[in-house]
Length: 257
Image (cartoon, rainbow, N blue to C red; front, side, top):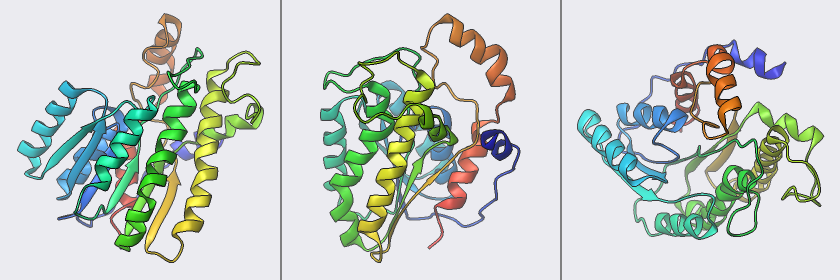
């Protein structure tokens, strides 16, 4: 019910600009991340986008730089890979310019259990561990900067974990896999980690928050088989808002000093 109630509300609008600020966005080539990248670029922010696909990243870079006349760099990383996640975070460590905003947006939804090459359930890795690893690697840099806003694009779907978060079976090897419960587990874990990072950053000028972007139409779950794709196209997508609604909400939360 909370998801339905929240989805009926319109986002507040922020008129501030982001000129000269450096914004990091994960998963920026489609969906919410793409809409957020366009929104921040339209307000003057320079971008570093962390994506999986080089061709789409190049297309995004060309579009952002030609349309909005701001800088748009990218880092290639697959957040289901521990190595890629660590490498992306260390690339950000090397940047001399302070990072003003980090938006952890990348995420997936699966209907069948998948285990990564590191032995971790894939949804848990992409939707939780990747942002945790990046924040943990960057935390000292950000604290030394004295100012940064970190946003976790989370979900009301964290409530699904009420039926499925088991610390003794995070890889789902002991029970039948549930896409909703797996998704909820990862989102709840991200919220719990956020509370610990908030303690670390408190008083430093760095803030970390999470938000529910609303139920919006994205490509998440598009590879989950014909039945799910039919349900998404013919039922689910007809009830969802455009991704611009989520981008507006994200922007509202980020630029303020």
